[in-house]
Amino acid sequence: MLKKLFTGALFAGLAAGALAALLQLVFVTPLLMEGELYEFGDRVHFGESGPMSPAGHPAIWTEMPRHFTTFASNLVTYTGFAFVVVALMALASKFGARITARTGAVWGLCAFLAVNLAPSFGLPPELPGTMSADLDIRQIWWMATIGATGTGLALLAFGRMNVHYALALILILAPHLVGAPHLDTYYGEAPPELGALFAVRSLGVAAPVWTLLGLVAGWVWSRD
Image 1 (tube, rainbow, N blue to C red):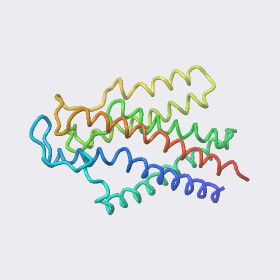
Image 2: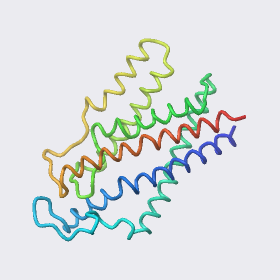
Image 3: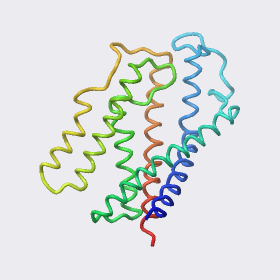
Image 4: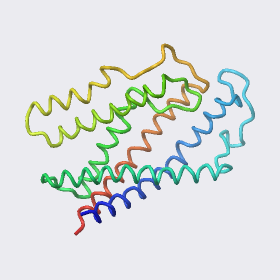
């Protein structure tokens, strides 16, 4: 059991981390680097801007040490996530749940809903230089949202009574009815269009990464 748990989490985490690093490098990091230009004053929204690279974006290939650090961070982060997912799979299997690659992909999508999509409904991914509410308060809301959403999804999946489904709906909605912490006004250094694209791409990258994590974890778990 422990060997299967460790192997599944390791393979799933490394696969998901590698995919995350690749997709982020192509779709997210260029926007992040461009946002930093606004944060540091090299470009000004609605004003005179500094020189741009010939391609019109920051030269992404000139910062390889930074990208290597991001790659390593993704491997570590998603391996940690994978251990949590596989541990929950092991717990569910003890109560009769059948874990396969297909159901594992569903587990991964549910994790995406709990960890990324639900919190982003109140606190979307932000570019550098974006002014936000106090970090500690945002982290508390973020963790509470993940816990409430994850528990709600578990009740929807494994509940057997109407009260379970009602409680699931309450848990999923509760953080958003309370409301995420925000400032009284909106302002930032980067153009809002860039921030919106960054948020959408961050979520778009996370969805297939979590799906792959769950798929690989389920596939390894289902093997004898």
